[in-house]
Length: 232
Image (cartoon, rainbow, N blue to C red; front, side, top):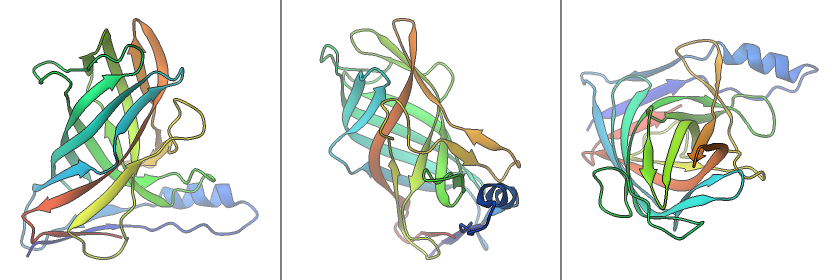
């Protein structure tokens, strides 16, 4: 059995006069690494979005909704993964037309994204006390519905699985705020540097760019079935 341990500093909110300043200072000390005793990268995984549908929505309310998402990826290093997302049965809301990326069957969108594991902001404050991934969209990513749609930038996914124990599967979710086009999680802290990264997703339709959000829940399973991962 391959046991992988992803170890990070768990930041806890400390009630003090200057909680924000304290949290920012603590966040910059964040270490992250993966232990693979006697093993080597990469580690393969696959997954499926488990909600009825996943949705990309712009600030003006236009959205693309896909009924299923299949996931295939690899953990390449201590914090980096690459993931193929295959969005199935995708339709845009304005005209009800199917959305398709180049080389994919009608209604399907294929995306290859780079992802970094790190800490994400707590939407109730400025503390980095959630674990998540920063998903970076490739330059020039687009697909066609009734018209061509280009999506750029990055989005944050929250890891919602139990922290501190070995598990074969990991659950994640993409959440939205009460404002259309605005994701719930906006800031990401990488172990590569002390500065936080602000995630921003932008969708361009007919030359007009708008802020966008991503909604969806899912699971990834490690391959083979004997492998486990610990995030702590």
